[in-house]
Length: 290
Image (cartoon, rainbow, N blue to C red; front, side, top):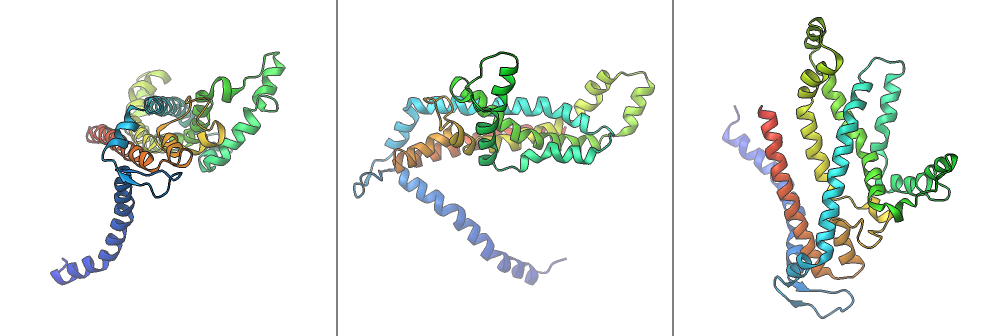
């Protein structure tokens, strides 16, 4: 049992790290709150003035905010659906004993370790390019016109790129969960004459409920801040078709040079992320307690 002296020594040794982390977090937040109450344009230096909540009112009533919020929800929901619906069968396939299974697993997981900027460039220039891309070449084999993905279906293109990056993560988590499934239950089900579909629905799928919830929680947190894929491929366009909240804040700060409005947008994004995280944590907690 630790004595009061050792507990005091532990607190004293931990104090510098805790203070440093607190400063690391609180200083940017305090500056963001301060700038959000100012009229602060980099194009008009020296004209800073206190405007109260005017930046928040402007950001929340801007039509671009509703469009970006809709795009953010579409992007997050679509990527979650794709990664879960494809991640489950991929995990089931990778759990089967086949020759070279470790190499196949490594290749399936590899896209998750590619930097978002690099993967966006690969998809933009090598796969989805309307003239020299792989998809255009495949379409030409069947006599079909090439699709200009980033003009005709920009949001679908971004969704495919982001889903390609996050599908390995979902597959890896679900595969790990499958490997911990009780084999005796499956053997008992087979002896009782249960088919593959029944075994999947009544044994495997309930076993994957918790890891699926964890995948949804972690992916949602990161998908709310998708930026590099949009910046590299569409630049938020055409129009506002692929502008999410993260890219809208970037455009306010470094395209329109309106620091005050961008700071207000950043705080709104923090509030939205915390609301989403609150409900997701409650859902995860219920599943883990079940």
